[in-house]
Length: 174
Image (cartoon, rainbow, N blue to C red; front, side, top):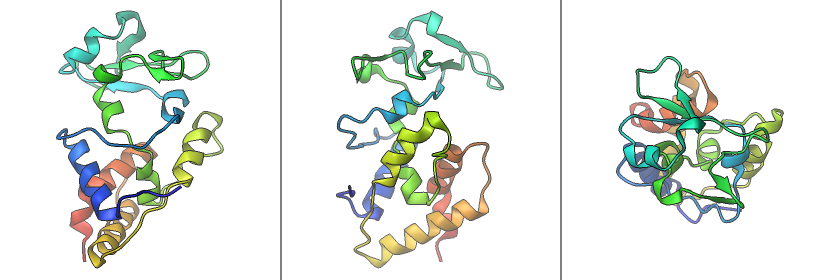
């Protein structure tokens, strides 16, 4: 599987999504790996529309975050409770985290999802299927900068490290 977008186009769109200017446009098809991988979904107090569409009993306070920040957990199978019949039951009202999630970020940054962890296996497989094109020198420079950022930054999780690398890659352009 390959991305139809050149790396630079994907990177610009991903940065816009992370800034909250647009949703990530991920060609998921029938893939629900991110929804079935035992992931907690953080939801901010400003996400009132999202919060209005999730039953309160599915939310709990987010540790180490200020009051009002909550997490949406997962069921006994590791599935998001909003995933119903293989589809997001609140798609138009989904959390910001879901709107910006793009498994291609792991391919872009060269970071491997822990495929050994059973609950992340499907994400690792899906991320491993993506390939980017690099039609311009700028695409190649930005890709190298993202990879340099990964080597220089630290984060508590692989996902956060990937996000930080994309957000700060311009500091690593040569």
